[in-house]
Image 1: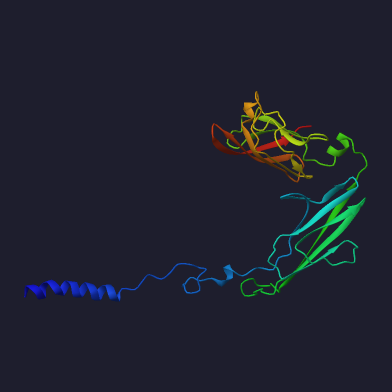
Image 2: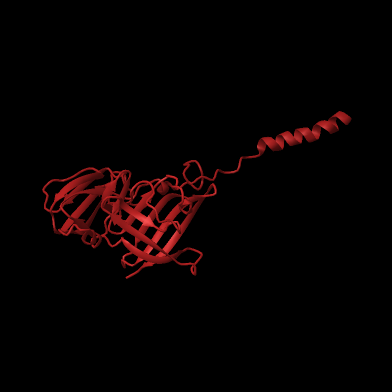
Length: 268
């Protein structure tokens, strides 16, 4: 009886364990799971695109106006590179361009020019995206503003991103300070007083567009300018009103990487 008494619970436990089922999987990307959703992997047909200038590896988009002092290289960039085919029409150019990214040279062009992108998606799914037919066309018009005043003031007039702004870091609305984005023909584009107290041109030149500015460097500040810490990234975006400026910037202080956001308004 003793042996039978000891074996019975073990036998019962073995039977219970063998009948126990694994819980159902929980992965919407796995076809074997009950919550599988195939639409998560279906690509919607998309023909959004940007018109940009380019400095490796960054593309800064134009909004609606493209300053053209003379010959200008312009890049056309589709937002989604997963489409099956691309067809670009650029102004009156009879050619059809078929890459998701390409550039053209514009020589002393002025006035409005229409750009059109049509994309085709052979794997579209109208059940996942009702109305998706596998073909989409997007058209945009840009104004090429040809200017001849290549002086410092004449150039700055074409790029509203440059100027002096008064603002503050997020979280410190009462602690305001001025930030300047400036362009120097010999030294390039630079931010001043960012981080606060840094008025040196550090490292590489910034790249810019009418409403975007990017400066990136890993150089250590020179002696006497330790307040500059180690600027790493300054990315500024001028809002459509041409007055409000948003800046994301980074620097290293005491071995700690700090990220901040600055908001300001353009001064007259």
